Image (cartoon, rainbow, N blue to C red; front, top):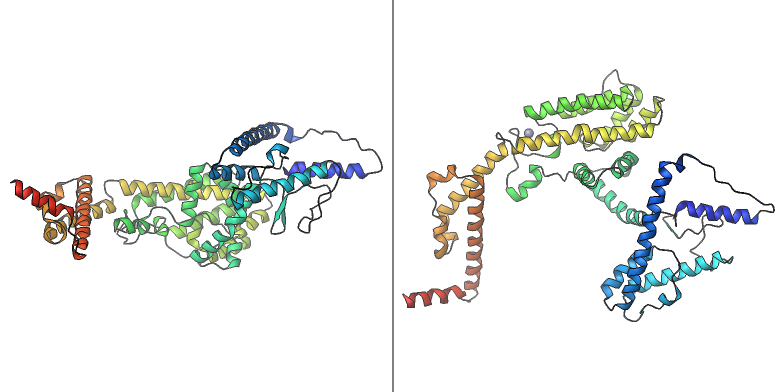
Length: 452
Ligand SMILES: [Zn+2]
């Protein structure tokens, strides 16, 4: 049931109880324009979906495949439309508990809806005490009634506490620090993003981008591709002294100021944010300036408690919102959302893009380190082939040392991959021998010897 429908039902009930007649009229408003057309299209899509689900449900009732029934029953769970009577007795004997619970919930909901629509009352139940007279709201989560977007709300209720625990543990935040982050702007901006952009913002926020600090577990190399730093973390990416990255930072700052002006974000906030990011990217700690307004100073203090390196990731303090509102500008929510988006679009993503260009560029230190590491590995195989490879495989490691540096990267990688396979096979063979089991290849060699 949509939130609007719930309110309409409540209004209908109030009307019916009034001692006088009330005429209702539709008053055209801004929602009757483009928004109305959009809502109508969404409603049509939802109607089609319901119809499709109902057809699938009927089809599933003829099938004996419990997995299919489970999927269809789950789809049907949130559809409060009363079920036709012939569909009510769907095989209860051979279905799982979850399916039976879903069916039973549907039955109770349908009976209640029908009873109330016919002028009766919902069955007495201590759990059901509706938010207002005439409401047909279905359920509540932690004291909050849910009347629309049911699936989203259930998903959020299930995942939010786990994510909160994860973040507090990972970033060392207490509850007050976690609550001092302006989450509404994160939610609003991300909900307007495309799926790939949303994934990118998640990776950025939680430090899941493939920086060398993360990739070292696969490659064994954690050097920064752009400077002599030996541990490239996400924080380092924004502080890297590589000339290309420094130039990208300068360009990003100029772009931020330009877009901030266009979006009419108060200049004192925009200046403070730009200054903060600049100081953070220089690895400095002079975030405060004497010229800052007191609300901005409070915001900087709160941001520092969250973590200065968290601002480029998109964790903004609530006090930034207060500082924007204090300037007396119009729609501080829209300004805060714009600020959130500017940090991702104009600062973090362009710098990350530049870092990737450095990584794959000709002067990449990572590329050089990787070449060295591959050469060293090939050399190791060449020197230790008698210990780590079976006799029949040792020819694979006959490498001309003088040629190693001339080989290209993909050849070396393919060669090492084959050598690793042979080494693992030899390990398995040795293990089997220790257990007194002769590998089948022994027999093949014997046969071969006899023939020759
Ligand atoms: Zn670096």
